[in-house]
Length: 256
Image (cartoon, rainbow, N blue to C red; front, side, top):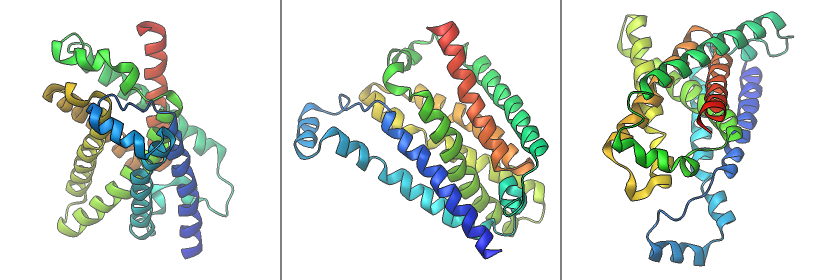
């Protein structure tokens, strides 16, 4: 069991690192820094060095989450289909089923957020975000690999599992533990998206955008968290990936 657990987490590490390396494709915006600070930073580091340094935090988060998952989920093989099938041949029908569920819930997440976004997109507070879309928006490859894979490993496999473990120790009713774990991890998921927004928008960010980023990402966190606990990590990954694909295609077809 220990060998199986270690093998699985090594695989998760390489998957997560693929997502972290995809962050190198994100537009690097130093213009939001005050000129004197920007000049000082560029004297000490090249842009490539700054990009590499920006990967340190995600790598640390990934390692912490894998360490949490290694101990907390070792007796929970149901949380990952591939974990439960190490040393066995995965069933193609099961994989297609989880892929289909991911597709449905990915579209549901896209539809829910789209419906909530439409009434507020023309508000003056949102224009800052709209005007900086090209800066703030990571490319599709980053959304798929970092958003769809690395974030699910960090947030669902790591933090949600830890919160659920703690809640199970505090509460007798499993449903209460599940609801609290999903809600808390989803709020953390929403808050976790703020740094890149601050980096992209700088002083032009406003309170409305902060709430928008937290709430909209928390909604996705609830959906992906539910899929993780109801099905497994892979289904949550599929749903997260399809959400970004649907959003990308919609923007490409209707918003370009």
